[in-house]
Structure formats: structure tokens, C-alpha cells
Length: 105
Image (cartoon, rainbow, N blue to C red; front, side, top):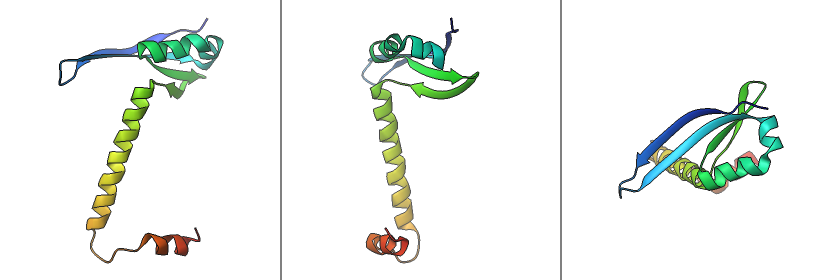
């Protein structure tokens, strides 16, 4: 049987006083595969973040959908910030159609 190690347990309090608790554990890919339904249940119902290990190395993670949505929102914000910064650079802006044409897209 694979070893399950708890990496972190934290309780955060949001601005409205609501509490958030997350647990992150590590399991082997073999253990996750053997009890895939249970693994998904821990993520979906209990909000656990599970890091999958293969050969003793972290290879992937299973996280609640809310975590994925937050990550995507953060990526969008970073992309927007980078685009705004690029627009502030000196010199002429190059139209998107020209960029695509020059790259053969």
C-alpha cells in the first residue's frame, strides 16, 4: 500500500469572515489509480489538493475546479498586465493582422 503524506493543512479567513481550509497530500500514481474514485472524491468533496508522485518525484496534481478557475483568473490578469506593459513600450504598434501575415498564420 502506498504512503499518503500530508504536506500542508491551512485555514484562511476571507474578507467576509468566511473560512477556507485546504489540505495537500502526496500519493503515488499507483495508489491514485488503484482508488481513483476515492482520490477524486477527496478532491471534489473535501477540497484536497493531491500531488501525484511517480518514482518518488512529483509529476502532476489534482486540484478542485475552484483552484483551477483561480489559477486561470491569475493567468488572465498576468497576461493583461503584460499586454498593457507592451502597449506602453516606445515605438509604433504593429497591427495583429500584420504579425499573423509575417508569421504565416
